Length: 174
Ligand SMILES: [Fe+2]
Image 1: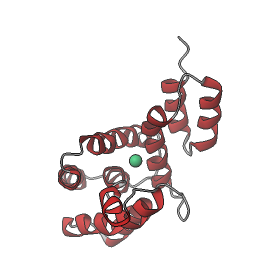
Image 2: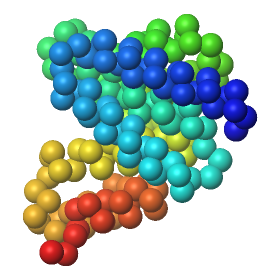
Image 3: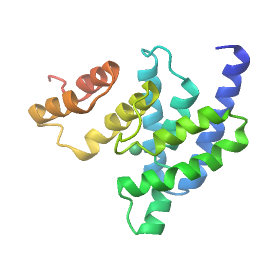
Image 4: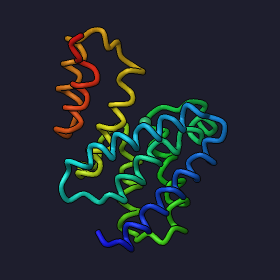
């Protein structure tokens, strides 16, 4: 990556975080969630070869961007409704940022699949999938049940680094 590309990506990342915060408004739990997913995605990315870091960062920041629209339009934020409402909002945010169409399309496809993994299996998608699981497991599962958590980790993670981080976080022997 050239220095110019690097600087552009840092600027895009900062702008996307600002846009994500303005969409979520005073919903600090949603903002915290997106920032944690971004942090884990960046950690997993360090051990991944040949991934587009801009796609990973943008998708991490924007993956849940449709949640409030899903609640407004459908009265609930089911995964499927989020997958439908998220991509147009992500596209509206990304298009004015001087980002090429292929990158925007890839980010939108990740947003459209982040609950179902239905139509995509790129390395960038796998990183977002795992980063989201790393944040969601302690919120949604009983991490004191190490047998179930171990089975869950073996089943859901799509990258070796994601699985390794999960094992360190949730299967610690005290
Ligand atoms: Fe999420």
